[in-house]
Length: 424
Image 1: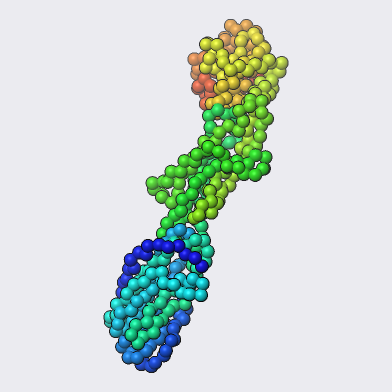
Image 2 (image 1 turned 90 degrees about the horizontal axis):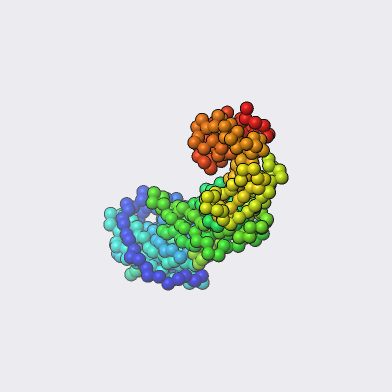
C-alpha cells in the first residue's frame, strides 16, 4: 500500500506507572519469538499483558510493548497525526518505532529512543504517521532488538483514511408558490444556508462550495459564475455561513414560469468527497402573465399596457391608471427589484382598486369625499390608501405601497369596493 512522503515530527514521550499484575520474566532463552498483543478499543491500553520476550538476564530483557489504538480508526486523507505506544524495558534503552505494512514488509515511518524503565514505569511515546491517500492501512509498534534482547511488536491495527465531507443545513429565504421570484429578476436573489466541515484527526479539509440547479427534475448543473461566500463563524469555527446570489432564470419577459431546484454542493478534491445539501424548490413566474391575470380578476375588460418607462410624473411608480380610462399601465423595469408573486398580485389589485373607484363613483370629487370619510382617518392620501386596502384584502403584504395599515373597518369597505358597491 503506498504512502506519501513526509517530514516526521519529533516523537514525544511520557512515563506511566507499571500496571498492577505485570511481572518480570525469568531468565530463559527464547530466540526469534515476538509478542502478539490483543488491541482493545478503550481509552486505557491493556497493560496487564505478559512480557513479550526475554533473552539472557531478566534485569536486562524484561520488556513489554503495547499501544493506545485510535479511538476512531478513521483519519482524513492528506492529514498526518500521531499514535501512542507503551513500552517497558528494564535495564537498557531501546528504540520504539511505528511501522506500516508496505506489501509484505514492515517499514518504519517514525521512531524514538525509549530510556530504560525506572521504578517499574512504562514510557508512553507519541509517534507521528504520514499523510495517506484514500484506503486502509496496517500499522504496528515495535520495540527493537538490543543486545541479547529480541524485538517485540504489537498486533497490527487497521486505520482507514478517507476523504472529508461537508454537512449542509439550509435556511433558505422563503419562496413559496405565492412568494416566488420573477423569471427575469434583474437583481440576483439570495440563497443562504450553512455548511459544517468535517473534522477527523487533526484537521478539517477545505473544498469549493458551488450552487447547482435542476430544472424540471433534470440533471444537476453547476451555475457558472456563481460565487458562494463562505464565512466561518467566530463563535463556532467548525461551521460556515453560506450565501450565493442566484442569477435570473431567464431574461425573456415572455418566458413561461417554471419550478426549479437549487442546492449547495462541495466540489470533489483529492481530500474532499462530493456532497450536496437537500434541494430548495423554487417556483418562478412570468410577471406579465400574472399581472394580466390578477388585473382582470376584479377588473374585467381592462386594457393592460406594459412600458419600459413612464412620464416624469409617474417615473417612480410600478403602475398607474388615468381617471376615467380602462387602461392599467405597468412599468416593466420595476420587476427587476425582486418582486414576489404575492407583491405582483398586490400591485394588480391596487391598480384595479383605482379603476373601481372610478366605475363605482364616476365623479372624482365623489370618490375623494368617500375616501376621506373611510380611508382618511389614518392616512394623508385617502385614495391611495383605499387602493392599498383593496389590494390588502385580497393579497396581504408586509408593507403597503403608500405606508400605514388598514383597519378592520377599512378592509371591510375594501371588500365592498371589489363587489362594485359604494362605500355608503
